[in-house]
Image 1 (tube, helix red, strand yellow):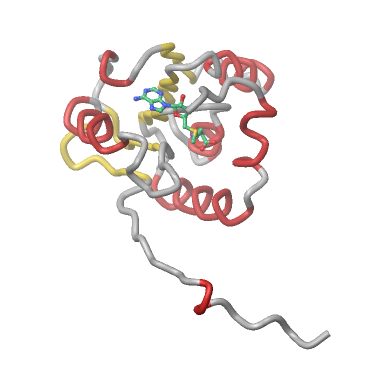
Image 2: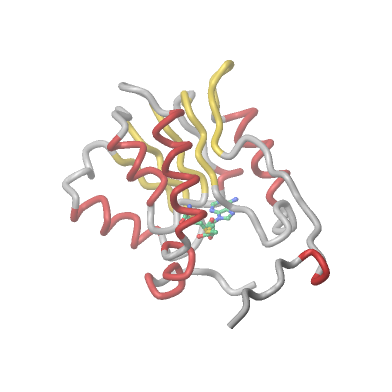
Length: 155
Ligand SMILES: C[S@@+](CC[C@H](N)C(=O)[O-])C[C@H]1O[C@@H](n2cnc3c(N)ncnc32)[C@H](O)[C@@H]1O
C-alpha cells in the first residue's frame, strides 16, 4: 500500500464521522491531566492533538512516513511544539520515556491486516509503562452479507 503523506491522503480518514467521533471520545476518556502519551502512526497528529486538549503533558508522535511533516506543521500552527516530540521513524526503532497512554489507529480494513499486531505488541511492551492505558484496546470483526442489508425505504 502507498504511504499516506499529504493532507489529501488523510482527507477520507479525517472526514469519517464514525471513526473520528469514536476515537475522539476514547482519547478524552483515556488521557488525563499530566499524562505522557505516545501517538503511534501519528499521520496528521489528530489523536495526539486531542490528547493535548485532554491535558497531556507531552505527546510523542511517531510516524514512519513523510507525514511526520504534517504532524510538525499541525503542532507548530497550534503553538504546541513545546509539548510535542516528533519521531520520524518506525515505532520498533524508537526509545522513549515510559508512557502513560499509547494511542494508535494503524488498523487496516480487516483490523490487523496491515501487520499491526507485531509493532503494537512491541510498543505496548517497550514504550508503555506497566499499568498504562491503550486506544484502541481491541477490535471486533463482524461479517455482513448483502442479504443482511436493510431493504431500501419505499420511494
Ligand atoms: C491509518 S493512518 C492513521 C493516522 C492518524 N493516527 C489518524 O488517526 O488519522 C496510519 C499511519 O500510521 C503510520 N504507521 C504505520 N505503522 C507504523 C509504525 N510501525 N511506525 C510508525 N508509523 C507507522 C502510517 O505511515 C500512517 O501514516
